[in-house]
Image (tube, rainbow, N blue to C red; front, side, top):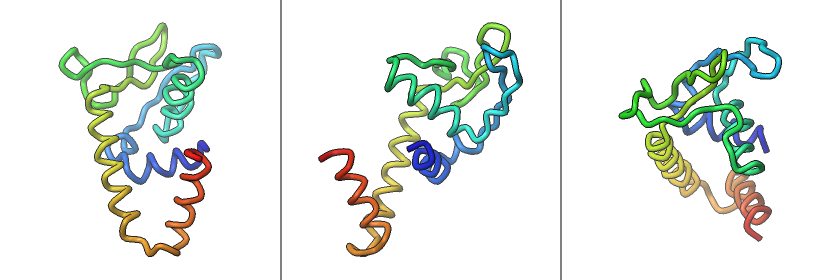
Length: 126
């Protein structure tokens, strides 16, 4: 699942996948290279929200409220973590989905890409 998430993120989240962050892991105080950003999103944003209903190591701030950009290094305790502006993230997510479905519509019905999408869709929504 993480590999698929990372592939989708890297392919369609152009601003997000280009962002590089070096942060401090809270429990070990070790420096952590958070690149690709997809790994950080998956583990602390996606999995945190899906399993704990909380962002486990990250921040949320709107650009108008002081976030310097769509993604930013959010100070947390003695280190930093990945922060997002949710409005910009949702806008990029919508762009990503439009591009993904546009590409998917261009595949032949029996192409490997279309068949793989159909299998995964049925696993999730059946």
